[in-house]
Image (tube, rainbow, N blue to C red; front, side, top):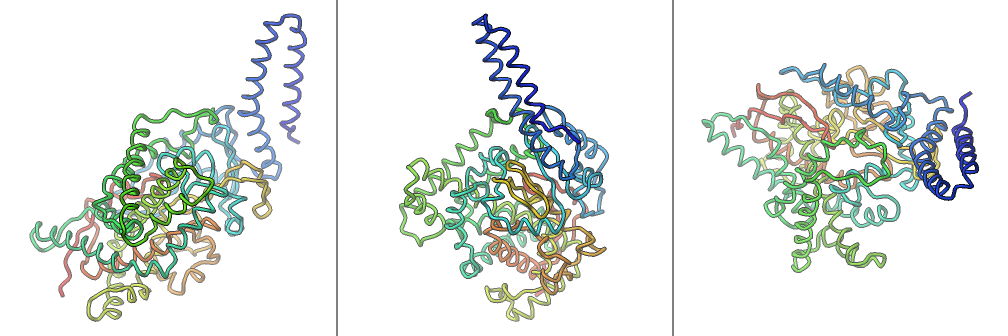
Length: 537
């Protein structure tokens, strides 16, 4: 039976008090000793006792995991496993292997094979619980946001990028923000934006037409990533903020630069052991954060002064102004933080999903043909519209399969804000729970032996019939914190893919290098390059 950490702490305290009693006749030494005692107890409690208590509570339930070091937990081992994996692995030429988890997150895969689908590990003084069991993920769906919230240490690391907006906040602030933002993404409102999505996609198609003409008039090689980012940025800007991408170009560019810096400082295990101390920021982060905040606020004030039709930006601003708990500075931060969240989530994640979609369709031209046939049936005049987009089954199946194999968000991360249970597991307050989405999405026991293959037909009868437990299909998250923009993202992807496939046929360029990379989201590390050919009318 493992000895309780509290007993060890008690003996340590007795030893220190005995020393203080012995030196009681020496006031200065006593003062120094008491100061040393206070600091020692604080460090002892923060770095060893509390993490050890949490680990002990988890381990006594029969949950095992790798042994941590004193100050850094399992972070050094994670770095070591990652370095060995990067050295040993390489994505080979034209071969496209869809299972990238063992390359991007080799420590999670190694421990999963060693300890099973549930294990515990630590980074610094944070204790984590890895859960990749379908029944327990289903249970997580049913937990309130007051029980499982966003991990505080991740929020701290990503605050320059996302602030305390909807994606990272907890409690009252999260509930207020969701109440404001979620209704703007209900399907009845999203349908009103389909025409502007198609207009943005037409701009992209015209650009590719010009590239074909410039490269001889037959075909062209295109690096799609930046064009898809421009398309997605244009949609989110016009739909939510009443402006075009050209006006928000500086904001998007600086957000991408900030994303690159934050991604290089991995928040999965790159934490200092003294995580309770303020961390010195990368020299570029503070200036980028200030520039982004200033640009967004200038756009907000310009919008406030105009008499244009009310949009999401104005809804956020009004809510901030009308909330009695906020002063002027709080209102500004509330507005700016949520704009950053919407710019990032509505732009980068959707553009990345579109890139993966074109990569997989380039590999599987038969699905281009199926989408094209359905488009011709629904739009005999060749003009896509809101009604036809919402009826397209083939493109919906393709997008769902793309999101299964390449979900932009790799993890569901939660922190127990109070003592709670996930199935049979007691989760102590303060423990962070992690679920690796790609592993669930490729589990042969749930999806069949072809789980690693691109087969959109598995979604022919909807998500509920695609696998044994549909609750594990979670490209947009789980439970109360399900992504509010999922309707917009799905319709936007359908509009872009349908229009592109209706105008072009395409295949993968010989220059394409399959290299998924984790940069806050899983994106094509070296971009997606395709060879396009204009379809004959």
